[in-house]
Amino acid sequence: MRLNQDIYRLLGLAFVLAALSWAAISMADDKKKKGSSVDENVLFVVDRSGSMTSQLPSIKAAVSKIVGSLKPNHRAGLLAFDGCTEDRVSMVVPMRKRAGRKIVAALGTIRAQGATALAVALTKTKAIMETLKVCPRLVLFTDNQDTCGGNVQAILDEFKSNREKYCLELDVVSSSEDEQVLKGLQDLANELGGDLYQASEAEDVLNAIQKILAKAKRSGDGSVRGTDKKKDDDDNGEDPNGDRDDDDDDDDDQKQKDKAKAKKEKDQDKDQEDED
Image (cartoon, rainbow, N blue to C red; front, side):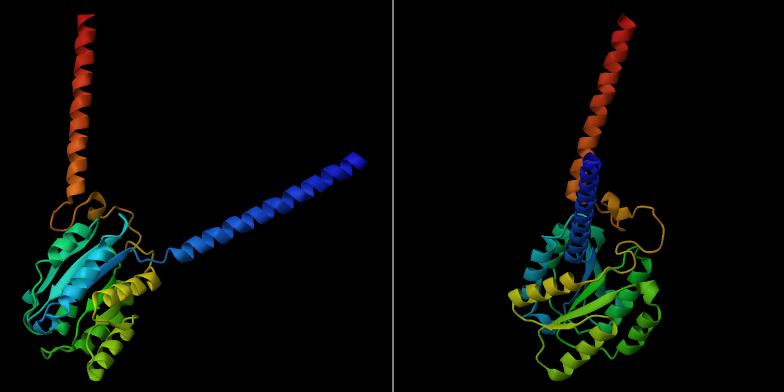
């Protein structure tokens, strides 16, 4: 009888320990999920109009540092705009994985010129969003509202009426000190689920981007639109323009060498069998 009681006590203790372990694991998983709030997809939208001359160096320094710390599975892209026509809006670096070096290189070529074509930039962004398989968070760097007479509100209304289609959120980082401009940019960000961050120095811009990415929420499933499980082109290191990262080229070279080596060994084995 005494033995049976001891066995029951041991079984009860084991059950309690197992329950506590399970609870600890669940809490750790929850904590990990909450701590992993960095959005996997971010599109940097840079206003390169003439008034951004003094601000561009800070933006370049901050964005370069951010993209240098992105994980391999994070997608990033760079869009820049100036002038009042659509041809002045450029998808400089298409959304892709391992885009850090391309974005840093592209930032080095950006020069300030032209007007603040915010409406044109948003229109082009809308068209780009329709072709993307991923749902990025947009980080817009600008110091002004639209100066080309564009209808920004109409574009915002279309974005909001097709949330699932465009699945984006937009935050604005601005160096402006004009209250009217800041209010307009605040309204722009708020209407697209984001916030306005006032920053001019490189360190302040960097802190703003870090805050944006830290509080970013995953859109949909957080990475790919819809239910299609087919891998994106950039999963294979390719972007829509057919460019490839240097790392991917190195991988391909090694694969080719390994393949050639395996074929050579196979041929040698066959020759040996024939001789035997």
